[in-house]
Amino acid sequence: MKRLITLALLILFVQTLDAQAQNKHYNSMTLGMGGGGVAVIDGYHANFLNPANLMLNDGRVPSTQVGLLGGLGVHAGGSLLNINVYNEYLTKGLTIEGQTREDMLDAWFGSSSSNTRDISFTNDIVPFGFSKRTKKAAFALATRVRTMQEINLSKGAAEVYFYGLDSEKFANPVPFNINSTTLSYAEVSVGYAMALPIPLEGLIESLPFINEMDLYAGVAPKFLFGLQSFELDFQSTLEVNSPLAAGSTIIHDFDYTIYTYGDIATQLNNFVKDKETNSDAVVGDYLDYTGTDIGSLGSGFGLDLGITLDMDVSLPVLNVLDDKQELRLSVAVSDVGSISYDNNPHQFNGSSTFTFDADAGGQEVGDFYDNLSDSLSNDVYGDFSSSASGAKTYDLPGTFNFGAALIVGKLTTSLDVSFGFNELGNNSKSSIMTLGAEYRFLDFIPIRLGTRLGGGTSTAFSFGTGIDIKNLEFSVSAMTVTDSSVGGAAATMALSGLVLRF
Image (cartoon, rainbow, N blue to C red; front, side):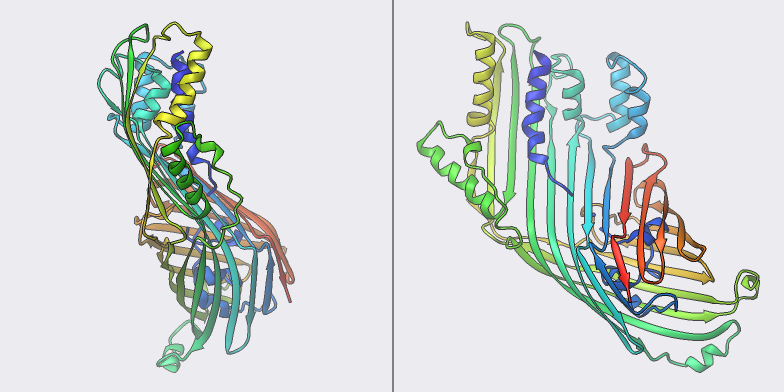
């Protein structure tokens, strides 16, 4: 019976978190090289990280690129995904009780029941991309669909699951908190890049080891369409004042707020209105979302811009590898801007204290729990108020990026340093450094390796490969952390899609 009640409480809230959910843009090449790439990303993907690179010309591939489903990136990670704890306690046949249970939850969440851990999901899809390079300028048109979701869960919620409704553990109120934010939007980006004159170019090129140099600058403004947005802030405490027997009680004191828009907001608002005159109204009867409002929920503007110095160099120490040597230095700012969701914005609030008496009161046990479930859905947690809300504006997950790349024949090495302007989705204000390398085996099979350090997680390693010939690219890459006890686990995957060049 304890497990049934526990699962009922959990399922009630977990059902609200079903969504899909990416931030700093990468493609299959840059992820395989550690996830940086501000000095090596090119083609239409450069629109979203460093549009100056639309001008890059390595002499190997044609000047026009077209991407059909031209890129896919998926990331999942966070401190809630602690694989070390899972392996230590949940894969060895241990009985999760007593000191073992306490040690496991302390290793996972820390000592306080109010501590929280998070998990985030992001994905980027580039349905279409086009880029064209000429001698004097380059142009690109690219679309991207981005979804970001973050869920925060308190230790108290995990304690409910692993302890059940233990009156000793919950003799005093324990925080049971859940917070979730989902943000989804589509982007249409138009990129432009050109070569700039270099002051004192002749003097610089007279320096040792520098043969020739070019300076490129690029900008990519973009328009954003809001696809979906949802916020849940659920704050509560749970108390069990005696063992589960006749006369015992469970006290759940909760207060939650939901922000939503468009048709969903209309349907929930209709339920609230009808509930005032019909106490038997059921919220599930009002929710029939068909997605017809997708793309109309909000709008916004963004900007990506960058600059790249591309130098033909001759470093004698590297001549043994290849005489063709190229050094690039790049600085870029990505995802400057915001998006506002303003289509029928509404706020829904529920606040109550649910007291459960475990005595069935003479009813059949099955009937008792059927009635309890209906009451929870309709009269307790489903009893909320509605109010019109103002538009909600979100900053884009902006980043500052510095990168360098050294290309020696078929070998490319890169170093990047970046940091985020906010903590939205997977974005981090902590600085991140990435190191990567690509070697083109037989000149058309790229072998990519990389590592990432910083950003709140342990060191991550990446690998990628595929086919990359003059007129076609199809490649994949993946990255994962080595130690989930530091900031949790993280795994990222990228697929190039079908990229045609001509």
